Image (cartoon, rainbow, N blue to C red):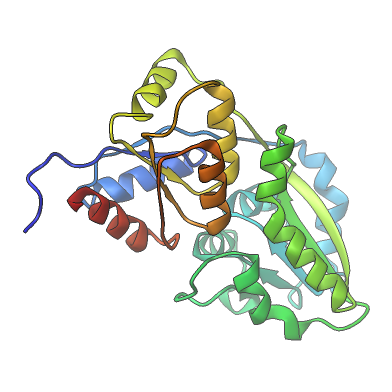
Amino acid sequence: MRSALPPTPVLVTRPAPDAQHWVQQLQARGIAASALPLIEIAGFDAGQLAQVQRDCATPGRYRAVMFVSGNAVQYFFASGARLAPGTRAWSPGPGTVRALQAAGVPAAQIDSPPADAAQFDSEALWPVVRAQLQPGDRVLIVRGSQGDSAGAAAIAGQGREWLGEQVRQAGAALDFVAVYQRRAPRLSAPAQALAQAAAHDGTLWLFSSSEAISNLQRALPGTDWRQARALVTHPRIAAAAQQAGFGHIQECRPSLSDVAASIESAHEH
């Protein structure tokens, strides 16, 4: 029998408008979700990408291009870029796959972890793509700039740095290009009040990035998080939440259905 208590409030901390998309999806399932973006995304001058985009459109230049997120796809293809037909598009998860397809990359050209993977990350992608590489190949990783918080950048970059090491060990060369900036937003007074209340009122914080946790700590220095509840989508994010002092941390797969089920379970208990 379901609890008669009011739905557990959930704060989605993804960058806007991605956060709003998740809020809409969760609300459609009866979950009391609202957005509190803790990462701000901004693009670079498109002119900086011109040479890299020409290389990616040149057959044989890159064996594969790894897009770390949907934002990486959006900003890379915004000015009409394309991939050469023989170049593989690597994706860490289904959200990035959808962005690639929306950008016009054929599904048959995209590699991603299987839908039932325990995690959607570089470690899950590597077994899918490692047989593609031969000595002398080149791989490009399309990502955001390192954050202005060194600790957050180090945590967030562990997966792609690990993938880069696997690529090098396979004998391939590795290039990186940053197509957008990730930075800490300036929280308005109402947003700060919401966050301070959510530190102790039973709100469930949904974190899909360690960087969001770091930005929250910087926005509210000295806040006691021992009564706060976090739902995280990766073990590295769980470690960051624990380090920040969150008193209750629950981990789940990053798919919408798994996140929604975990939220509903947290409400019932």
